[in-house]
Amino acid sequence: MLREKVKLLQEKYDLVINGQEVPGTSHEYFAVFNPATGEKISEVAKATKEDVDKAVEAAREALANSKWARWPAARRGQILNKIAKIMRSRFQDLVELEILNTGKALSAAQGQVMQAIEDMELYAGATTTIQGHTKPVPNGFFHYSVKEPVGVCAQIVPWNYPLMMTAWKIAPALAAGCTIILKPASLTPLTALALADICHEAGVPAGVINVVTGSGAEIGSYLVGHPGVDKVAFTGETTTGKDIMAKASETLKRVTLELGGKSPNIVFPDADLEGAVNGSVFGIYYNTGQSCEARSRLFVHEEIYDEFVEKFVEKTKKLKLGDPFSKETHVGAVISRGQWETIDGYVKLAEKEGARVIYGGKRPDGEEFSKGYWYMPTVIVDVTNDMRVAQEEIFGPVVVIMKFREEIEVIRMANDTIYGLAAAVWTQNHGLAHRITSQLKAGIVMVNNPISTFPGLPFGGYKQSGFGRELALESLDLYMETKSVLSYVGPKPLNIFGI
Ligand code: NDP
Image (tube, rainbow, N blue to C red):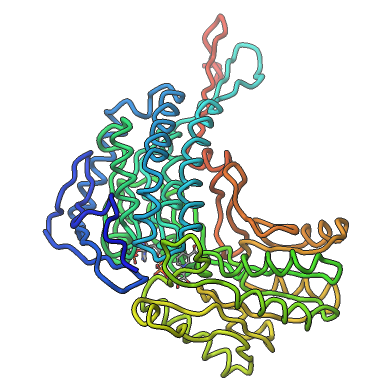
């Protein structure tokens, strides 16, 4: 399953600081693996705190001196379009690099790389929407407000969508005129590094995008606390998000957090059964279930419960696992041994808690799955909403299914979680769909549809799923400050004290 020739793959990757690839002060490198085979594919520089200092200094210099922030916004838009154009020309290469480093299925990688490109184009256009205002003020005064970049941004991304999450973060920051220190996940830094290259090729000035690779707990945390950083944008686990928020509060940095989820997927008896089953299978097993918005809690009305579960398992059995580079494959590998063990631990815990695994719950049979980190799509029933498997983010191809009878009961169960990222409702009754939608505490609600993102639609959570929105015009605002300017323009100087 190892694709011998992935064009963008390098033997070694350095840090990117001030437009240069540099080895890092420790000259140490860490290994990066192909999760589908467990084989080492490359080595990446291990940044030290000193390297982080240098990256922050480069980003501060670029903010102050490179005119980037003072370019006409539309010119930054041209650069974003150029980034998108280069990405399009290397679409297949980026897809292959992403697959090699994540083990995800080709179709998933293709969609995500395309969305990363469209995200660049979205914010290229969005640069033209940046504007201030003028407000009516008393005679003799003149007011205007302007938008200015928030400054130097630390952007920390996870391993589940390495390129797409990087694009979600850097595109609005670049559009706003910010400078960036990007910290990719240690398991999956390759496409983020490739994207930094593309940005420089497209004309992003030196120092505007810097990439530091290495341990989140060490250099990520140091970056978050760094006094030279003005804003932190993070996607990852809720507990990490809490640490980041606490650390960032020391210098009152701006923070946006896109965190975990345990998203409910609610199926009413009048739903188109085939559509609801297909959508629910996609909703959990897409990206091998490693999605913050995975619909991992499935609530099915008691009238259709048995039939639904039977069909759900039938369809799940049809999912093809295997070579992630094949267009036939639906479900790829999980990211790492650690994640495999976490998933398996939750499945065992479910059984201990009294639930029943009716499909999956183990490594798939067959020689091709003997290496790397493969886990069967797994279906768990006889679950109650208070079990840990119904409350905690498993982040793998595991769904828990629960039964409900009343509308009010399912709303209560759906909302009974610390999370509030996404939710889905399946019914032909539009009144019911929107009545439920209005009561769900979630940032994204899907109605008769399993797709959660399109460029331009805001993405982000309620409750402990974080705050701030990405992928839409709203996020551009989160990379800018508003400066309100009030001038006195009257004929005589003001003497308010009358002295
Ligand atoms: P983390 O939240 O720990 O990591 C996400 C990113 O943050 C990585 O770049 C990581 O670096 C970095 N990081 C980790 N700790 C810190 C810190 N203290 N300060 C600053 N940056 C930090 O997620 P993991 O990758 O460890 O995955 C653990 C679990 O998180 C998964 O099992 C899954 O449940 C959940 N998860 C949720 C995601 C979501 O989108 N909701 C995405 C990814 C994971 P490094 O890689 O070097 O550790």
